[in-house]
Image (tube, rainbow, N blue to C red):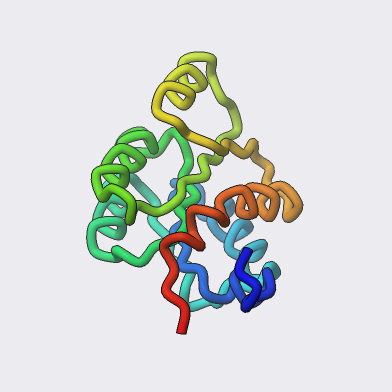
Length: 144
């Protein structure tokens, strides 16, 4: 972590996208992110794959995408693959799911996915997962 920023200061600079077709899950994760110090106006939501793809395409400054594996109009892996096409500027992905099949696990490993969180989400699990993403996020951030 940067010597110039505390973890709280870093979290306050993050831009996060929550992708889940369940409004309650999105709301709960948003509350966790707010409690960790992410600013309200830096948390974006999408309820399906098409909304996620639009946000990822438009907002090139996203740092983390929390994405459900199974969405109403597709799979979260499609959003992950689209974001990876951005190269080094792609946001970090943290997948969330109530059930992770062996098929999904094999695909995650093949694609290099680093984090999958099981629902229901806890503050500790979300924070731990975010902390594992910090090296990549810090490498993308510009400091004054």
